[in-house]
Image (cartoon, one colour):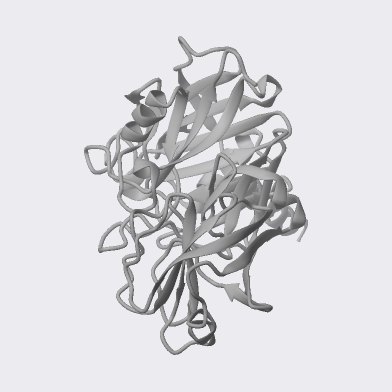
Length: 383
């Protein structure tokens, strides 16, 4: 009887160890030429199923070393490789040390490039949050990870209208969509009532500005003014009735805020899908994406009070690297020291760039055009 009880206890202990730890083997240091505060390593899982790459950013070196976001081609519509985004950042004076792919979204069709979660770049809100995990950085360098809510309202003629779409396709459940210059040259809508407006400020996470109507169109595909927005109302909605009363020269107000309230101070942010690690523990109640139990290429982001971690896992390449499941990535993040982590877009999109070079092996055999990316940048003379 005692032997039976002992055997059960050993089995339970073994199961606990296997489910809460993930052994890693460091294969190579790829940090040569990088400034202090940034390290890059190549790893292999101890079971030899996966090869992956990790960038570590030491938070003590902020603001010289920073986390930044980048949208493909400088706008929502269209896609680009991560390396193309790095080159574009260089043209704009940024020194990008490490870059990886980021969010999920529309990869094809007339709205290819639309991001399915939050994207904030240099204080400007480019894509809204959905109900899944987001990572943000405040102006002072504080890190945040939450499921975030954004509330945007338009006030005209004493009436407030809720905006339920930002830089995305006008659909039945989105009666009002706001389009900013970061979407593209025009709204690409096929119908609806739209007004173009000039605004006193770009859309930010804690926003309030006065706008002036510059154009009224009883149709879609309105050009987006560089210094303003387009407000698009679905045909037959109450918002259409209200907007149809406006004429050129009329004024209104746009306000926007985030919940939790601390997100009002975020200047760089990215959205993923599943929360992998929360307060140092495996997060098992988050959203699970397609094939989350399967070994696949993965991209993930994590952090603790000392470091930021960017991880890319190679996969779908028998004999080299099979990939990881969501839980594998979570346990690897915890082994690295992350207390918070979330999953980003994976599969053929997973790309890891170090100093302009692709160091991983994308599963499609080459870099894929993606929607956006996240960077670790360096500035010798930060402001």
